[in-house]
Amino acid sequence: MERDLGDLKPGERACVERIDGGGALRRRMMDMGIVPGVELEVVRCAPMGGPLQIRLKGYYLAMRRGECAKIIVSEKQQEWIEHSLASR
Image 1 (cartoon, rainbow, N blue to C red):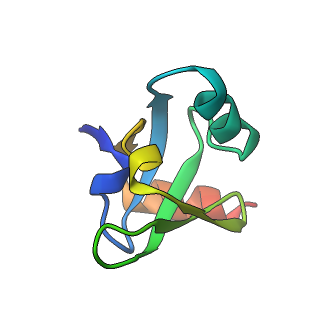
Image 2 (cartoon, rainbow, N blue to C red; image 1 turned 135 degrees about the vertical axis):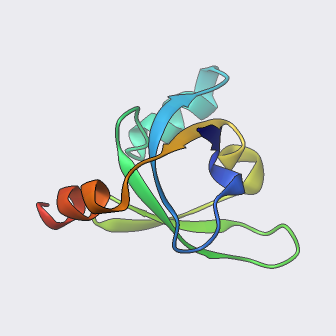
């Protein structure tokens, strides 16, 4: 099931399917490592519509909700993600 990154709750993990939009924002996200196929986890959410803290490729990243709405993710099986994160 596809949904945007901003819909995930803390502790949920997903795989990036695509980045909607274009231009500088898309390029910036790709420079930060958010590319199709990468697994990520939402660590925590700031209250009142604040940024999300996500973990991917061994580092943490804070992103605005508007940016997260452009990242389309799909949920993966829990054991598959744990195995791929442990192998890094």
